[in-house]
Image (cartoon, rainbow, N blue to C red):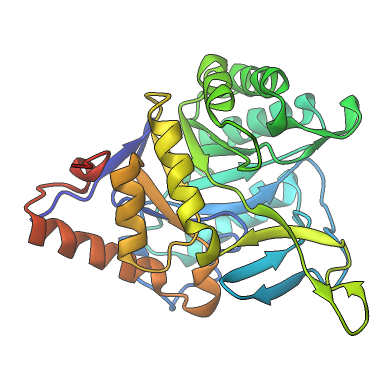
Length: 311
């Protein structure tokens, strides 16, 4: 019997497979489409203090090797999330896996306040399913001229410290891939008190309709996800693992067990399925089955033994 449990910075997961933020709704939308017992966690789409409409239409476009999206972090806001969404998830999903709540904001103070409210909620019976916080740092810092939090190690460090002060929940920081060297950002998170990293976020991208000579997306640019980014994501996970002892939730082009196992061998503790869910809602379940089969065939007693097991 393979031990499939992993510890992601204090978040105990029954399996190493999670869903990625923005690709699995708020967790309850896929009831009946896959076996939730094979998920170690579900990551809810981004939450900030107030409701946010996201970007205008069109805001996604399928491309060779993936998807380019500019959804713009559309979300309900923290009040609706805690009062309506979380109870509904617990009601609809039998033996629901813990929820990782992705958060974002326009200022350090907003991130910290959302984290504080989630932490208070997690201590109650109604919010006990909240297992961890994932900070999406690929957002513009409106107080500092719109510069992205995740592209300045000093600003990133301040953000992580501020959130850390407001929460006792496992704190995961989701890093942006479009930096020249991931290591300073990894160290900024580690020094700030992060418990884990998640990576990678989407890669900046653009699609042009050559007949209209216009960008396809209303936002003009977006983020690329899917199969096409997988090798780049594996390399960044490998680099991050060699720069820190923090566990890593790896994502980017996981469509089958092979992709997840690559991430584990590169240094990940757990993996998340994202864009693949749109074409096959049961992919995460199949990834889990494939990882267990791989461990059985190769003599691994636990999936945790796959982490950094490169020869």
